[in-house]
Image (cartoon, rainbow, N blue to C red; front, side, top):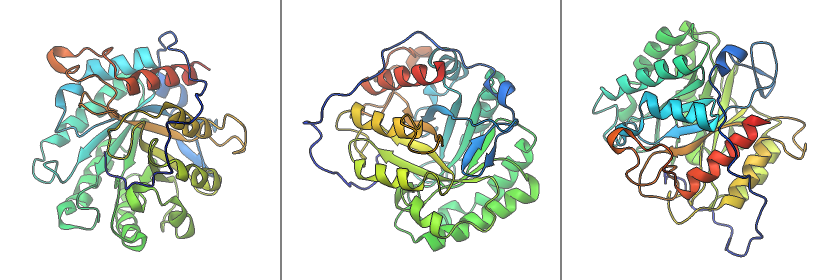
Length: 336
């Protein structure tokens, strides 16, 4: 979102070039949910209904209320049928002109849940905490009612995942944990099984704090990790250290700097992605799922679409450098 603080680890211009995937042929992921069913956790690994490890690879929307033309059935169908994406994240900002001031944006979330079901992929419903950064703030007073409604609507759906606080920031983990405990308890009264993603502090970077003091009801709860490739290279070691200790879902990440702009760091991004896929086996086979920020035509480096691509029904092949990189990576990974 352009929201994580800078932890730049130096000039990246002198990095060696890396082995990037070729563009590749289209991959069709329709029916992925039918093959895998309701997801659950086996230890720290996300697995399918039969217990086989699953890695979700896909896109996150930008703010649904800012780029509504980018979020149509045709757009998501294009991602599923040509990229091979098997998850889409619906980022419903609560502050910043989002749900708290315009509750009608909730209908777009429901539409996306319906479209992803029709296409047979997973969906993440994202309660997008950003400004203010404390999920207990008055802006988010509607959280309990929202999540009760979502749990009631979708408890019997195989494809729905709940992300209950996007990026807590400038707030202690103890306070965020209190919020998570309340929301998880309310969801579990209605929906005992669906995967829940709990955001971590410092813009969902502090997975180590969650590992030290997990939520009260950890069953089928994963913890969010977010990064931006040009800014957060130093966090790669944290992922390596904690991927075997707690269940991690990389529910947002960007190819750019934390601002969302400033160019694309493909090699640094691929380094993270290869760890998520445990390409070298150092993670004992643990694979992390991810959704990339963002499927939008905003004029910034992290957007997957070129400026103007969503107008007039959408030119979904009009990709930015970031979008072309990610399409190639997802095709390569999902074809394997």
